[in-house]
Image (tube, rainbow, N blue to C red):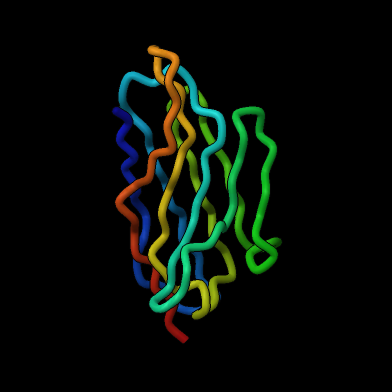
Length: 120
C-alpha cells in the first residue's frame, strides 16, 4: 500500500504564498502522474495541476501563472508552489498519485488533504 502525506497548508492573506508538499511512501516501483486537487465547501473536487514522471505539467486555467507544480522523483515527492493567492483559492488540497507496485499492479492513491485558507 502507498501512503501520501501532505504538508504546508495554512492561513495566508490574499496576495501571499504557500508551498504544499506531498511525499509518497510504500513498496512503490514507480509513480507516473502526481497531482494536486482541491475541494471548496459545497463544490466538487477539481484538478489544480498535475505532473508526469518526465516533468510534463498541466494546470487549471484558474491557477496558470500563479501556481507551479514540481516533483522530486528520487524522493517520490510532489510540490505545489502557490503565489498571488486569492480568497477563491480557499479549499482543502489533496495530493494524488498513480503508482505501480513491484507486484505489477497499479492504483490511484490520495492523501488526507490539507486546508488552505486565504483571507481577503
